Length: 325
Image 1 (cartoon, one colour):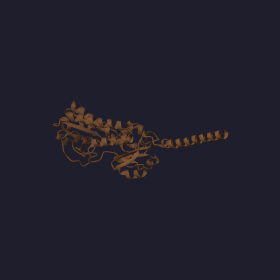
Image 2 (cartoon, rainbow, N blue to C red):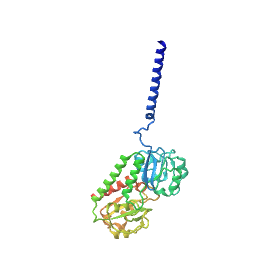
Image 3 (tube, one colour):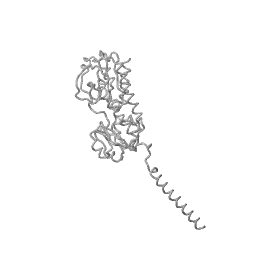
Image 4 (tube, helix red, strand yellow):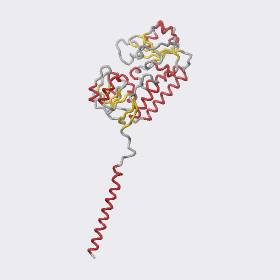
C-alpha cells in the first residue's frame, strides 16, 4: 500500500514538473517578443541626395547648416560640434562652451574637430555643401536638407522642416512651423496691391546692390512667392551678394516699395554703415516714392546668418503688416 502511494506521489510530481516545463516553453517567446509600443530607433527620410536611414532623436549631433540652427535651438537639440564663427553668438545654446567643438567656417572647415566629436548624425549642406563627401566618410548618417536651387523657396523650407521633424521626433512642431509660414505668405499676398512696384536691395561694405527678382536669397525670393511687381527687371550676375547698381538707376526705376537686406548687420564689421543710413540719406533717392512714403522694409538684422523657416516667416509677416498699413 505504501509503495503504491509513493509511486502515485512521484507520478504526480513528474506531471507537475512537465506541466511547468511546457508552460515555460509557451511563455518564453512572449518574454522576448518586441514591444509593439516601443518608439522606432531609426527613420528613413529623403534628403537632397535621396533616401537615407538615420537615427531618431540622435544624441550626438553635428550641425553645419545655418538654415537649421533656429529650429534645432527651439527644439532643445544639443550639438557636439558646430561652425562657431558662423553663429556670431546668435545661438549660444547650440555653440555652447568647450564641450561643443568648433567645426570652423565653410572656407576653412576643421574636419578633425568633426571626427573628434564622434557624431551619430551630421546635418551638412548650404555653405558646407562642398564638404558632403568627406562628411559621409566620417558618418554615413549625414543629411543635407537646405533649400535646393531652382525649387520653390517656401516649399523647400517646409520640406526641410518636415525632414527635421521626422529625425528629431518633432512632427507636430514641424507641422506648426510650416502652417505659420503658409499663413504669413497668404496674409502678405492678400495685403499687396500689384499696381505698386517693388525693388529688392542688399547693402554691404557701405554700398547698395541690386537683388534680382526670383534670384538668390532673402529679398529676391519675395517676388515669385508673393507675386510682386518688379520696379526693375534685370537678371542677376551675383545672386548671393547682389549686383552693382547706382542710386541714379534705383531712382529711375521709381519703386513704390523697397525690401532691403543688410548683410553686415549681424557681422560686427569695422566702420559699419547701416542700410537705413545708406538709403534714406542718399540725395538721389529722396524723391523715390518708397523713400518719400517710408515704404521700406528692412529684413531682420540676423537674417543673413539665419535664413531658416522662422526668418522667412518673420519676413513675410513684415511684408503683410507693411502692405496692410
